[in-house]
Every structure is written in structure tokens, then in C-alpha cells.
Amino acid sequence: MRRMSRRGFALTAAATVAGLATAGDAAAAGAGARGWPRREMRGMWVASVANRDWPSKPGLPAAQQRAELLAYLDTAVRRRLNTVIFQVRPTADALWPSPYEPWSEYLTGVQGQDPGWDPLGTAVREAHRRGLELHAWFNPFRVANHTDPSRLVPTHPARVHPDWIVPYGGKLYYNPGLPEVRAFVQDAMLDALRHYAIDAVHWDDYFYPYPVAGQVFDDDAAYARYGGGFPDRAAWRRDNIDRLVREMSVRVKKVKRGVDFGISPFGVWRNASTDPLGSDTQAGVQTYDNLHADTRGWVKKGWLDYICPQLYWNMGFAVADYAKLVPWWSDVVRGTGVRLYAGEALYKAGDPAQPPAWQDPAELSRHLTYADGFRQVRGHVFFSAKEVTVDRIGAMARVVADHYQEPARPPR
Image (cartoon, rainbow, N blue to C red; front, side):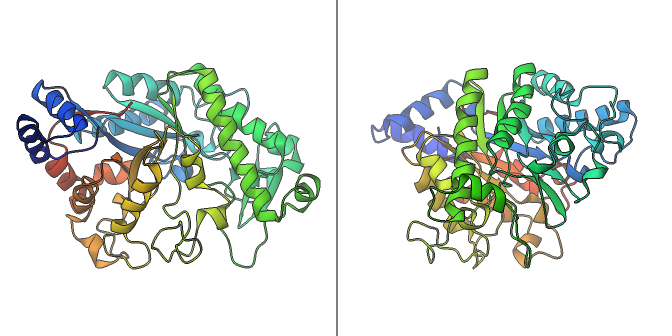
């Protein structure tokens, strides 16, 4: 059922009485009349990479780390959100006792050091206790925010298999072109699903890395070995990512039925100037061409339960207009069964470096009002937890006041 304002519910109910509403709207009105909470995604990301949101810095005592995490969950409840997307594998590491990868350095400041507690286990248990869903957020290929393998613990898979890694743009990445890499990263992520009652497996926008001027992602050897059946390297790279997504989609359901698989990609698949199927945008990055991620194709093939494009631009922004991307993505998901959530750039609100639109506390509320006109949009996710808490200019408070006066359950 689509997101509706309270006024929208009243209008729908009236239309039902008059015999004018669709069957779907009639069901929605009936649910409202019986007092059932409506279903829409109201989420926030909690980023652990580089201690962006949590923990506030590495090396804090376990009790303080836990208190900070619980405070974010309490903030989600206070803002009438229903889902927390918690980053548990930021850089080929783990925020749970994984047999595949080391403990994250963002916990203790030392990679591989046991923090003395189980953040993922605590997050799942405490989120559910508060009536929140917990989506476990994984980054598939990023290994380190530096290019020195010797800084990784000796037992790190990237040191055990140095042929798996590629330095690029000041970071280390696993090579998506190697079948053994794709199998390993899936195994590492699925370990969390096997051992915890997470509600969804969530990936962000990093597949092949964002382009860095003057640098080359050196996968020549893998391309020579595996790329013979493809017209060019770009097509081979896209197939590598397609395989990862398709395989993970199947494996998630085999491990635990009822768990969602969702991806939050960069918001532009392709510009219409590149492809007539693309959006009316002029973005410098296109996921299909630059990240070799066919995000539109994944939806059309039904490999995902939800897609949450990062629509991190204001209404009327010429390069990528929120008001043009919402209808484009709505058309992409129409008839597929894949749920559409809009990723929202709360972090831009009140940032003086951003355009004037982001200095207006009402900008994000206007996003939700606009998206309310598209029944395919099943909710919104806000980046990120720090801003949901601090709320620099009151943009989140405005969203809550205008749109979240009543609770809602996540779509299922």
C-alpha cells in the first residue's frame, strides 16, 4: 500500500463510500478505519565506516559503544521510524564474531581485536525489542581505505590471497572479476544471516569503484582469463556484478526465507542522453557505465525485494532533479513486485556548502509530499543516523511533523 498523508486517507475513505475508489484504495481506507497501522518504509542508515555515525570513535569502552548504539535505536523510535540499516561489514571486516573476516578496526582501533561484545547481536535484539526492523548493511568489495596490505592483520583473506586485491584511488578492493572472490564475499555476508535474525541483507552503492581521474582499475589478468566471451571489458564487468546480485538473491532465500534482499544504488542508472531508457538527468556518474551496475536490470529481472536509490538531490536541481528521478524509478519498478524506497540526503540539510534549497528545513518534507503522489514509492530512508539525531536545521523534525504523526509498519 502506498504512502498517504492523513488527508489522503480521509479522501480515500470518502471515495470508497461513494463507490469511486479503486480496490486497492478501498482496502487502504478499510485498514485505516479499523485503526491498523499503514505500511511504509521509514528508515535510517547507521554508518560505521570511518566511524561516520557509530561508534563515535574507535577504542571506546564496550559499555559506551553499546550505549551509543542503543541511543540511535531510541532516536529511531522517537522519530517514528521503523527500520535501522546498520553497517556491519564496512571494509571486508565484521561487527560480529565472523569466522571469515576480522573484527572491524572501527570498534577498537585495532583490526582483529575482539571488542568484548557482539554489536550485531545486540543491534538485532534491541531493535526488535523496540519494534524496529534491523537490516544488515554490507559493502561487498571494499577491503581498506588505504592501499597497504601489510596494515591488514596477517590472517586477513586479502593477505592470504594477495591476487584477490586491486589498489585503486587510495583504497584496496577485492576484484569482482574473480569467481572465488564473488563466492567468498557472499559466504562472509551470509554468515551473519545464518546466525542472526536480521530482517534484510542490504548493499550500498559500491560495486566497481567510483571512477578516479588518471587511475586504472587493473583487472587485466582476470579479464584475460574470464572475459573472452564478452564484446568488451565493460560488458564483462557488468556480468560479474550481475552474477553477484543474482547469486546472492538466490542464496539469501535458501538460507532464510522471508528475509529481504535490498540494494541502495547511486540514483542515476543512465542519462537519457546516453540511453533513451535513462532518466532526464545530466549526472557525471552513471551506475551502468561507471560502476558496471545494471540497477534497472536487476529490478526488471526481479532479483531484489527492494531498491532504495540514493536520490540525494533537491527539487529542481538541473543535473539530477528529485522531481524527475522519482517518476523515473516509479516507472522502473512498476509491475515488477520490487518495492521502491527513496534514499534521502538528510546530511545535506543545513550544510552551508550545499545549494540554497538545502538551507530550507522544508525541502525534505516536500520530497515526501511529492513522492506521495506515486503509489510505487513505498517509503523513505534517511542518511544518516547522526543527522537524524542532531537535525541541524530541523529538517527531520519537519518530516516527522508533516508525515510521521502516526506509526507505520515496514512493507512486507
